[in-house]
Length: 68
Image (cartoon, rainbow, N blue to C red; front, side):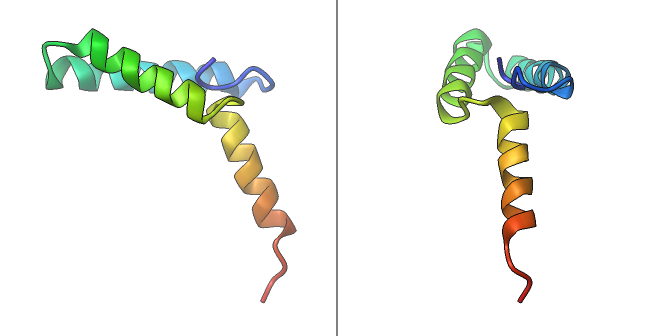
């Protein structure tokens, strides 16, 4: 869910981000599970189409923007 469902790379990116967040949280705090849960819930609510969905929207916006 983190990376997005609509693309082949979405689950791969989601797994990489999840593992990075987990590694960071374990080294940062004793309450890493709660920290990771809050971050994941926030990301899922903020990015309903996943990380790759956000990247796709950003790339479409750049392509449609007129060159000035």
